[in-house]
Length: 327
Ligand code: UT7
Image (cartoon, rainbow, N blue to C red; front, side, top):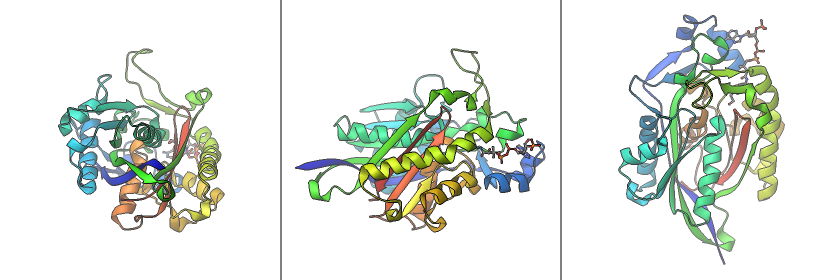
């Protein structure tokens, strides 16, 4: 008997060149570096240049992931781009990424789950790989969130940034006894009743405009720790692991206080938690793969490690994925 598993082959990330510090932001809106650092842990964010689109960020991250995986684009047959900030209303940004990478086979699609996008995309790619729809996937989270911010609203504009991250996942058939590799389990959740806690006040079918991010921050915060902990517990019990067995916890990078709250609730020591929110703020669907890339490149995450990913965002959407790292 063999079991098909989605194995991680490589990870890549990209942050635009322009850095916007808290101090610079404090010259634009009524805020301070101290407030932002204390309440969120954020020190700076990256902002895409004029003419630099979500697909461009995605391509830069994908190229790094492919190079580290030692896989050419000819070896990929599925691209999923998780994004809330597509280049255009249509076609899917994933098809533009496909074109820019020179891939003319397979299929490509966008996935919209806001900040939970990457975890949703990992679970989706894992399902496609397991059922034979594809053999090697590029899973990308990419955002130019700066384009949907209201730069006069201090309650939101200080929180977000632009960036992209990518993973190469490959379907591998493993003997039953050797199946403890790659994506071990995922749990996705959503609750549309909470849509107005975090949303964009425009859209194709409603206003015909792009709109700006609106958020009841305190409400989101209130729900976050409990919802995230619940899905992590679900994934752990489904896969038969405990939080004590995790080598690394790679959470969505939105707010250091939420990250610490989940870590505490799950009994995960701070030394096992990957934090990059200080450097790039909340990059929505890009935040988890950007944090992953950091911890892989600096040698923390190694082959064989048990890694828990989680995210939560607008909708509400939330989810977690457990991976036995193989990169
Ligand atoms: O992926 C999911 C994405 N979203 C999130 O994860 C966000 C979740 N929420 C949060 O991270 C936090 O709720 C925030 C960081 C957004 C806010 O932190 P908070 O501790 O919940 O603050 P608050 O909203 O309760 O506001 C406290 C005070 C308010 O003033 P008053 O009413 O007490 O006088 C705000 O007006 O801080 C004020 N405030 C600011 N002050 C300086 C709000 N934004 C700012 C700001 N600078 N940028």
